Amino acid sequence: MGVEGFEWMLERCRAKLKKRTDQYRKVKDKNNRSGNGRNSWRRYYTLDAICNHRPANRGSEADLDSEIRGH
Image (cartoon, rainbow, N blue to C red):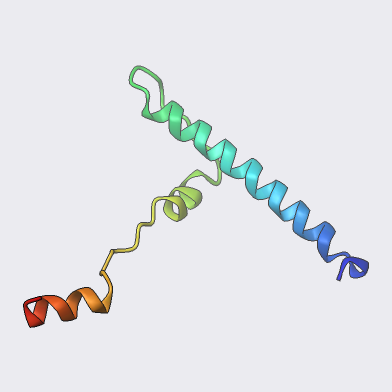
């Protein structure tokens, strides 16, 4: 795969994602400090929606079975 350029593309994608994530964190930290004006960035709300998504913890089925049986 390296011959076809996939390794290069992977490293470039990682670098771009890291740069965007770092920029998102800087904007988020600045906005969370009181006394600072709001700062924004073109991709801020998109990354905020991705980074703040927390799936509900439903537990494992084993936990549910033991509660039903009373163990």
